Structure formats: structure tokens, C-alpha cells
Length: 269
Image (cartoon, rainbow, N blue to C red; front, side, top):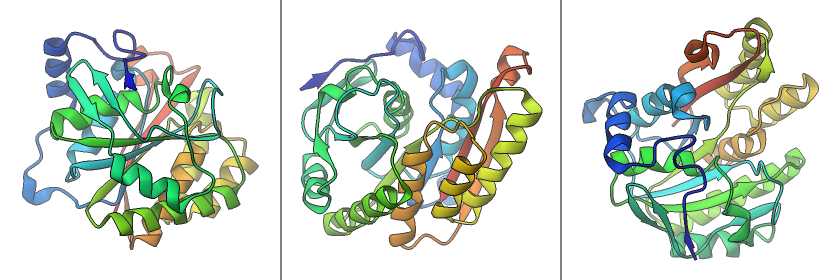
């Protein structure tokens, strides 16, 4: 399958020259010696005018390996609960991005939960908006796109452990990108308070604590499943630290703080 962009011209500009110029503004220059060899990052997925600075600063802080596994929520509830695009290419404005078939095969072998499902990816934006940042910083990038629908913590733990096994078998560096926005459509004060609770658990590398605090406090963090899975996988791969790169909300761009969406960028290493 050749996947066409679903949200080019909406969440980000579709013209390659304009997109490159936009990315140059959003992604700060960080000396290579200061970049982190991360195992995972958490990056938001709103329109670039709202969350692009957070995503850009987060991606800029890490060494981008050639191979990237992107985990995102399924906003359209179409297709398999754990839907992997294991073959083909993504035809993005900055050029085609190949799917990592070798890593995809390993993921399918290690997890009986994951299903190969191209159709689930056709309309989803949560993974797509991460790709231009990866292309900008690593033009030869390959991706493994995996959508993760809602489920229990045990599902997250089992999937995260399987992902870690697949990456270990793959034998080359893989960056896990968990795509998630934070609290949705609440006043800035309550959104910030709730998001701090979640970010405290992320900082502590406590995936189960994160999952429970989001559920128990009704935090509308759309990527709770991908983020929990990414933390489980990163811990199994040896992670010991998490660093919040930036937190903000949509009010910074819109000026409206009555109903905001929170955005956080985190590096796990």
C-alpha cells in the first residue's frame, strides 16, 4: 500500500517548500554533542500552529536513528485495536517514507495482539503529523506505524514488553515515538493541574501509575495507551531517565485560555 497524506493542508502545510520553511522555524538547532540517545519520546499531534513548537523542540533534542516506531491513538475507531502497517510506503509532501518491513515482521511475531491492518491508517492524523519532523531531521528514515486503541493496563504491559523483544531482536537502534496530546477542552488552570499529575508519573517512569492516574482523574489524554506502551517498552530496553522538554497549551497560540488542549514533549533515555 502507498498511503497518501490524510491531513496535509490541514494540520500542516502541504507544499514541500513551505513545509520545510515551517519546520526550520519549529525545530531549533541543537549541537550533535548535546543530543540525547533516546529510547522513546512523547510528542503532541495537533496542528503545527498549536503544538509544532513542542514537537520540534522535542525531536531536536534527540538523535534520530534511521528506524522509528510510531505509536498513536486511533481517533476514528476504524480497523483493528492494534493496527500495524507492516509493508509499503507513506507518500508525504517531503517525499516517500518506506515502511520497515523487517521490524514489522518482528513485531507481528512477538505480539499476538498486533494485526496487520493498512485500512486503519488511512485517515489517522496522530502518526502522520510526526513524520515531517522525522524526515526533516533524518531524510533516510524508515517507519513502523502502529495504532493503539483503548484497553487495560495489562494490554499495554504485554504490548510494550513484546515491542521491546522485537527491538532487541532487530539489533539496531529504534526510536519509539508515542503520539499524544494531553488534557482536552478544559480551562487552562484545570488542564495544567491534571496534566502535571500525568507528567509526574511519566517523569518517574511509572507506566502503571500513569495509566491509573489518567483513568482515576478522568484526564482526557488521548494517547494514554501509546504513551503507557512506550514507557513499558523503554523500561524493558533499559531506560532510567525522563526529561520534560516543554509543556504548553493551545491558548499560547489562540489566546483563548477558557478551553485549551495541553501539549507535552518528553524524552525517555
